Length: 429
Ligand SMILES: *Cc1c(COP(=O)(O)O)cnc(C)c1O
Image (cartoon, rainbow, N blue to C red; front, side):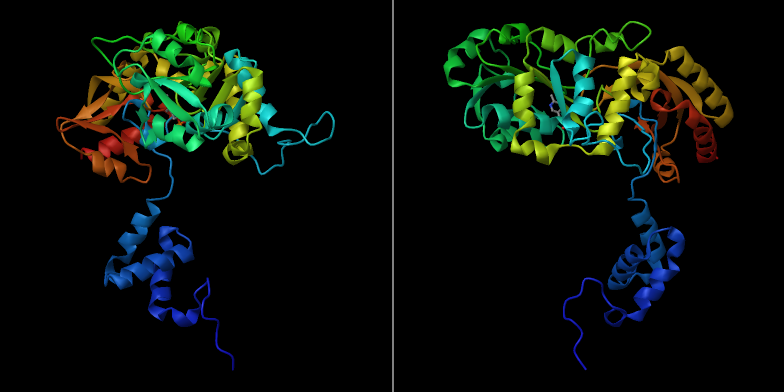
């Protein structure tokens, strides 16, 4: 008889103690697939905690991606996937890379890129996986081996380890720091003009510099004799918000918008899909057609391109913008709900649950608009019940302030109010 192979990817019944398999089967009600339960059973036995295997299976199940109710009042919560956005997608083939006109191979880049360009008034645009990818790709395509001038006040770290100097290094471009942390002038850029291929302006998304400060506006930077890239990050398409019925909300006041940044003279703008744009995770590069084309044809573009899921979702979103149906974009609907409506819901919820209705302050979040608050309403109770609310089948994520649990309704879809009422009533029993 021949020996069984020494290394096998699927452990056979032989090298698994029978009790592992039996224990795994006993955990089937957790809903996890058997191979995952085998891992759980193994670690339970290895830790001598077979009696805790059911708890461990439940904990494992809780690590799966699951819809939650965001009651934090933070509209773009980094831990909760930033913008809420759903998109219908069937298991269908698409014309992702087919030209329906010619029947020949088409380019996925044109599909949603053209809509993005129209939406922000650019000549051309392409979409990559996120804004970090947009920064990396545009620096690699336009300035590898050359200098890129950035104000010292703009050398930012966005959450999650995205640091401009590090991304710059990875792109092969050389950072040319100009000015100082608090004050940078146009002349600082002009002095290095002959040593650089690009100027990059980076929006201070998540911090402010106050006091004795000076910075150079986009229209001034555009006078420097090299292309200007503006990483605006947040993804506000147009400062006038033509997709909204009313005027732009006052809390957007100082936020740079793609259209106005291009009008002010930026050659390219870069922004995220899942911040103020309110869509799926994506990064958009929009602006001068020749520069966009250099990004599109750079070898890294292939590694950063989205597939049909993101392309389809972003297309649906951009069409909604272009049809000026802002209320059909969950982020904008939540962000602009009149506070009176939230108060009415909060009062209703309070009478159903025994919680108290309260005025609150919501925030845009997502590393955008630091210090900005949006008037909101919700309900509160005098105990910290954050953990039991989070432990529910449909987790509810609230916040605690001075020992009180606060449920902010600005970020809750009214369709979830009933689920919320039930949970809150139970938690205070
Ligand atoms: C958020 C942000 C990024 C990173 O965007 P991702 O889409 O998360 O990769 C880059 N630059 C600025 C200025 C940002 O605000």
